[in-house]
Length: 314
Image (cartoon, rainbow, N blue to C red):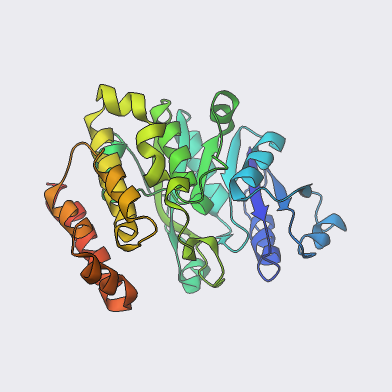
């Protein structure tokens, strides 16, 4: 039922834990595809030595995490693709809960699950399955995008007729897939039970790096979704993209390398939001100083969250 795609690049301390969490699933209709993305270490060698007949390694030259996920999708043999990053892991009941939802809701095409950064939570026996359907995803996504890669399952049929992860994006490439899967007509559901551990143990992980602005979804959203945004057929979608761009681009407004480009992108936003504009238009020395301090970064981020979640959502 599930093809589990795990991209691997320099995570030797975590990959076995990750694979073992899949092998420990109480639901057993799955395959594991680990895509070694040209990693210079021997972290996946244990799988090549017959560790489990359910797991296989596909090796490729280094192309980035999106390329590795796309390779895994091409090798998938089951109707649903479950994504899992090499330093994250699942509760033993994760696939069982997703399978139960799909049995009750066979029209589902994308399923997310609540996740945690607290390992202790995943040692607990989860409550009975609890989930909800997104009736207006983009209306809710402005406050919380919900879907996280290691806690998301997508119908393989979507990838048969649509592009997968964009290799040219180094930030937001996963959000782009979820957006397009939902726009494609896929019914989306979310499991409230906490079933996935999101690791922040690797200090070198990509989420700690600020990518080039033109290689982020926020920097490219107006081009990628130009037709939909221009036609304004989905007002909730336009509003979501505008707020997403504000929230992701404000740090670039106080980086001399990207300041002009960031403001040029923000001028394309429609609708515009004055309170979000303010956070992007502070005097440069003040904004830059705020982002250099942990307290300032947190304060500015919390301001953006408060405006989006408690003022603009009303």
